[in-house]
Image (cartoon, rainbow over all chains, first blue to last red; front, side, top):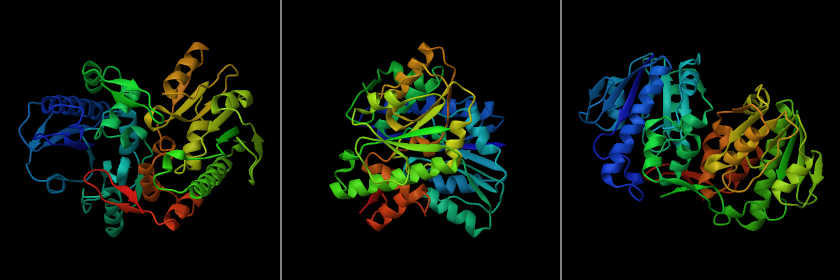
Length: 201
Length: 201
């Protein structure tokens, strides 16, 4: 399975600005990218990073500086999967579940309406990443007559976008992954609150 | 599979106080409880509500006014599963995945370190729901020499605890469920933000 991994090389992870400096956000984003590509590779996929700028990377890179939606649509083929670069909890097992459905288009929804990963076997499928994209993508699939499936995965649902997501990486991330090692070395720890725990530094 | 469904009948869902009045929180909590019990039943389980107070309910109820940890430990048996009453996205399929592992103890982690559901086949397993309970529960299982499994499920990971969770119910909930119908009738809609979408009223 060919797998595109879109990556914002310019100023990544701006919603983590409250807890990480710009150079830290860049390093952390790169750690997650390497983990995601390695998981794709272990799951039997062939990852290609779709980067907004030139990056030094051990995996194949296509450079395209357009917005996410335009860049993905320009390079989308079928069969192909698209997996976001910030899925720091991803495992080969979770990706295999996505790659192996027999639907024309299989989705892995993200928290808050995102489409964290999908796999299409239908050439006519296109993306639109604005707003609650999972809803738009289901509609687009329906409009082209594609059968759909949804992969029920916590590991694919959690993208590391906001400070509160970091605790999920501390609690559930692979201890040998670049991203989890990075947040541990950066000083993050599980901190208790009245409700859900969070990561403090 | 016998399944305990703990339910706080007194003042449920206090962390939703910013968006729901007390009587609304009670009605919404009840709607979710009925959906969870129905899903357990459809998955081949036998649900028993473990309620802090007497409630009118079509499923069997055990009343125990102790704190969650003490109440669950007092009624925990093996084999048995414990499924939280606020898993409004739960489906019979997701529960079957939990019930059918061959581990001594199988966990379904919740967002923010919670233990949204588990299934034990080991009499010695006990719970401790304070803080990042998933970590404590993994430790307890290890201490008693139990084999463990983790069910990778978004539907079991999302409990409806905080206002931002309501959008997950709008986007992914079964349209015929009591809980989703309740939030739609209460006027919640998907609203766009800079990042993840949320539910507005």
